[in-house]
Amino acid sequence: MRIVVLAGGIGGARFLRGLKKAAPDADVTVIGNTGDDIHLFGLKICPDLDTVMYTLGGGINEEQGWGRTDETFAVKSELAAYGVGPDWFGLGDRDFATHIVRTQMLGAGYPLSAVTEALCARWQPGVRLLPMSDDRVETHVAVDVDGERKAVHFQEYWVKMHASVDAQAVVPVGADQAKPAPGVLEAIAASDVVLFPPSNPVVSIGTILAVPGVREAIAEAGVPVVGLSPIVGDAPVRGMADKVLAAIGVESTASAVARHYGSGLLDGWLVDTVDAAAVPEIESAGIRARAVPLMMTDLEAAAAMAAEALALAEEVRA
Amino acid sequence: MRIVVLAGGIGGARFLRGLKKAAPDADVTVIGNTGDDIHLFGLKICPDLDTVMYTLGGGINEEQGWGRTDETFAVKSELAAYGVGPDWFGLGDRDFATHIVRTQMLGAGYPLSAVTEALCARWQPGVRLLPMSDDRVETHVAVDVDGERKAVHFQEYWVKMHASVDAQAVVPVGADQAKPAPGVLEAIAASDVVLFPPSNPVVSIGTILAVPGVREAIAEAGVPVVGLSPIVGDAPVRGMADKVLAAIGVESTASAVARHYGSGLLDGWLVDTVDAAAVPEIESAGIRARAVPLMMTDLEAAAAMAAEALALAEEVRA
Image (cartoon, rainbow over all chains, first blue to last red; front, side, top):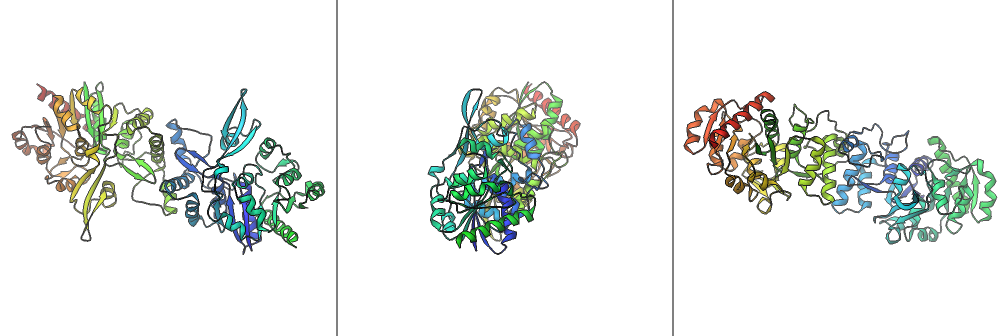
């Protein structure tokens, strides 16, 4: 079975680990969000791609969900000693090496997809990890600070400001001009099922879908498209998805997110058992829905969620 | 007193520390060799400038003479795990931060001289440290390997090959097109004395002198120019200077190095006491010479050497 998964960072990565356990023989292609990529210290940093790579490759810091295990911070502390910032983005020494290799390869002319493949040659994530695009896409968030509207990089909004002010708009800058990376459309067209993990519907999956051709390819693939709600009991399982959902006028409920994707794209939707009451509303919007436990407390729970998603996909197919 | 010092790496840095102790009120401008700069991992590395900066700023690894104290090597070990080399150049985590800051500033359009000034704002070396040029100069060494002549970067010859084969030629690639960095010619013209520390006469001081205008400015400054022999008892005090001296047809003796600089450039020359017999030969070449202890075993010894150099300069001036 060929499975295509659109993934953001932590939620996507942990779901993928469950999927690999639930369907060990499946051929999995991951289309990773690059809208939260950021240039810091002259280096190209791809947080979501790295989180997937490190998580599936066994190098992730399990507690925080991002960054490397057994990490040290000598480079960061030296940069601070030079007065060179920003200091709010946590980059460890091991992690720096990844960004140095990536930046060097990009500087030598390799596209991000080739760089990602090279990095994965070490990590052996057991999936084919593709950036959504080799072109630069950068998600900016419009915020009002001291009565003035300004645009900040998504990482600044998320990591530095902790989404403490309302997002007035979320714009994937450059997405409209971006081309899907080599292999993205082909993988979708050849897939047997497409999954949306419980990743952020706006700044992760939404950004991937904003790359021209991706949404169309999924709709035209003619295979079951099944998602898992990142909202449980009207709140994001992790992160601050409610802030960016509000910016695009979508309620923070499992049902509203499903209807935001819409029946033109989504065939099936899993909500948490606490949201079982939302199932009829989602189904009345033309999306088959099931209520199952959606808390990825451990690998077993993630695998069970993946199995439920695949089961719903088969139900849709039949 | 305004002193200009042409400096390479370890020998130059340790001499400078002695000079600051011997002449604490002097206004010292250091013209640093950049011919051994190298690009590794997409980063611009300036070993000689950094050795001077770290040594005078109190950050040097005293035992090895280069690199940072309390160093760790997480980045290097991760780069190796990615299969990204080379692995023969010792770059620690703290050191990496310097190269990251430098590369970022260069990428933003700052010349190396401005970058060096910014880095020194942290280290406060107590001297004005100028790169010899903002233009790229890269010393290459021609070697015969397996019957074939090839050119290798000086660092590859020095650090990787340990100068284990003869140098057939030493070429400061780009030097003929390089311009002295802002302030270099002005500092020389305004100096009261110019010193050549016991740095490598070919790949350190020789490279600085290869930048068009520098040699002429020193000759025209009309101030005492005094050097210290890096050769003691017919062998380099440290490093493998004999290998690169041979490549330019100069014997590895204190006298031959003085005569290589020549009386058109050099007014005074200090040799070690073990080379006292060479003094007449040097003086007969028109260069005033003195035999004094030249082993920089500690700060006191280096300060004594600097004091002797300044004393010889005054003798020349009188």
